[in-house]
Image (cartoon, rainbow, N blue to C red; front, side, top):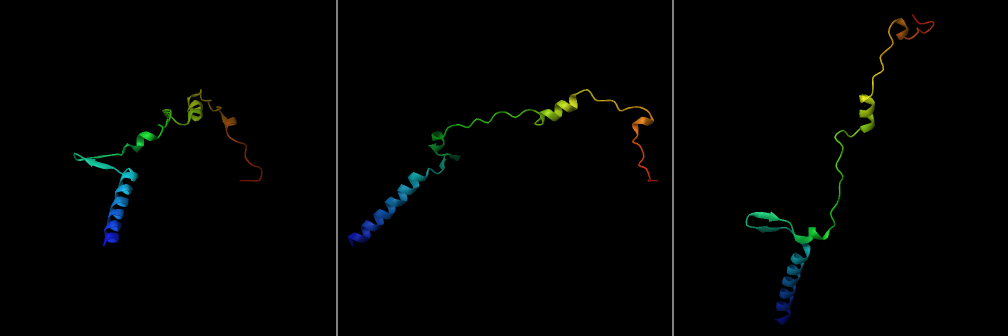
Length: 83
C-alpha cells in the first residue's frame, strides 16, 4: 500500500517538475504571455537594409546614358553568304 502511494506522489512530482522546467507560455487575464526565458538570450542585431538592395546596379542605371550612334553605321554589318 505504501509503495502505490509513493509511486503516485513520485509521478505527480515528476509532472510538476517537467511543467516548471519547460518554460512554456502562460495564460493570464486573457493574454498569452511568453515565459521569462527569452530574457536569458542576448539580443540579435540585424542592420537595416538599404532602400534598394542592388546598389551597384542602381549606380549604373543612374549614370549618364550613352546615346546610340546615329545613322547607318549603327547597324551591324551583314554576314557574308547570308541573304
